[in-house]
Amino acid sequence: MSRIAVTGTGSFLGGRLLRRLAEHEPERIVAVDVSAPPPALGVGYRPLDLTEPASDEALLHVFREERVDTLVHFAFLTNPRRDTSFAHELESIGTLSLMAAAAAAGLKRVVMRSFTAVYGARGQNPNFLTEARPLQPNAALSWVRDKLEAEQHAASFARRYPELSVTVLRFAPLFGPELRTFYTRVFDKRLVPMLMGFDPLVQLLHPDDALEAALRALERDVRGAVNIVPRAPIPLGALLHLAEKVPLPVPHPLAYAACEALWAAGVTEAPGGFLDYVRYQFVADGAHAERELGFRARYSSRDALMAYLRYRHPDSASLREATV
Image (cartoon, rainbow, N blue to C red; front, side):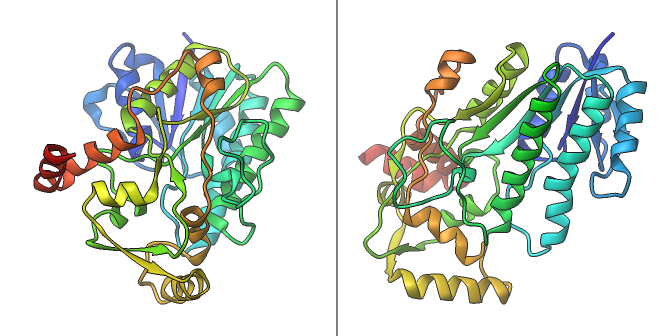
């Protein structure tokens, strides 16, 4: 019996996917992570740290022994870390090890998580970025650079081993109930800084839509990158209005310097380079996912925000919904 290996099962999205897969045939699923999944799920478990030396050899042994034919790789960080060496080892080098082991073990499929942030937020971006758009993130922003390198490793192995089907799901930023990321923490504050003169369109993806897209990717053999985005983007200023936040306009030269200094001091959620993503838009096009995966999001960006507010700030959300 062939099996599906899942990495990143300790993450929010990876854990939800593992639970959904375990509902049907738990004996076919094996979690590959540093922490064990809940025993009640009934799935297999192989402890493995992608940042350890020779993790590729350990992975090859796991894949062969467990008779894995499909790998779901969701071991990526959703929040920036000050320990950039660990993040690089996990995401870039870890993906390289996984792809090498998958090719050597003769796996048939790899479904990998990525992020629409890899396109980069730039003033010359078109309104909707297709999968053919060159990836040009801020090279100084290691959080995105490591994810770009992971995609490059996956693409390289897909070219070298055409018998290995590699699907890369570029998710828009997740936003919804039970999530705690640096994106959601911004909306937990009453006063939210905005860059003076900029109000980009943004995309917030509901977790239920992200999960549905991942399941469809396992059902259909779609090669290459696929944008997974919500039904409609929304201006950042409108999101702040819906969330009843007070925007604080800040000149962008001052904002970049202040954010970088505060990040170095351990105060802010993200380094200064992330301000690109609230200055310029990076709205991805979802037409390819609709054609190839049959996926169209149920929720809009506004829906995702309201779902989070009902979960985290129920009084505020109900008041806003009653008046909008």
